[in-house]
Image (cartoon, rainbow, N blue to C red):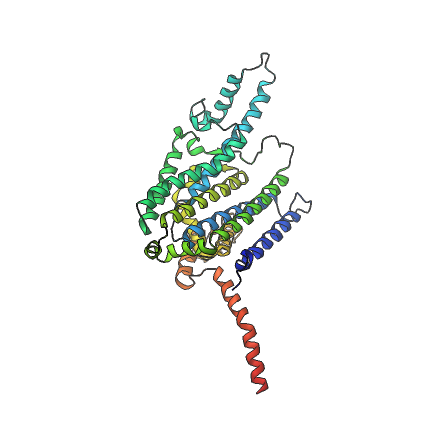
Length: 404
């Protein structure tokens, strides 16, 4: 039997990339940057952020839906990527402001005076004027981009190695990932964490050196960058879950002991999946927060990772496109309900304000999907494909009946 090509084994890749391309092109043509103004710049940013959430949802689906590791810490990796790029954005932007303010000085400032002025601008809100050690490379875009990959990757590698070598599985592993996330968020809330505590990093939408570029144009650039990252991430993870590697990963999910008995080093596969999904989550975060404009420790709190698991479950665990669809649907509905787009319902004795009731609706949806439709939204495509394959057989059967 002839081996099928990678694309033949994963027909969803071409469909997914085509859908992303059409979506991105359509949003671009309807944006203010294109001159039509059919959709606002803020909504373009919402769409760009949604693409980033779809990418981290796919990463979560690989580690949970395919490998069976319910990680409640992947939004922590997402947030670390955002912090890494946010440090450079704040530093470079503040450096320009400080340089302009000191340009009129009679005596040119020394490099140390400039550095102190930048530190005072950034950290004055937490009562200090010195750069913490973690800001050592904040002046270098290249090094901070490396941090986007290295920091989440190394944290996942160390944590995963310690957890998997001890053969922690199931709910205990989920609790450990949640504890890691909680510890990280509590640390970031402290003013002496070096990342401005509860204030977080702000003004990230203002790209250094691009003051003359309208936000409408910047939002389109990030939309395309997010779409490209999502497409590449989908191809990467489709490769990971295909072939022999994919079979072993799914085997670990279904019966870890049997896979180990067959001679596979289960811990290595789990560590690989955990680390690579953390790296991709960090990249998604680095694209998300310049569009959001701000990041604070609440973004890496355990509840964020729980929401991520809900998105994947609603979309369809074990299906890459299902996780992406789930994240897109929930993200856009969340923006609509919480921004006042959904009309309130007056019941006479009580008014349902969707801004307050959105999380309740999300929780009810999660329970309903879990109980009545465990394959999620992605399962609808399975039904369509199954019916489509059966259609020729049904036509042939009707022809035979007519001939008889």
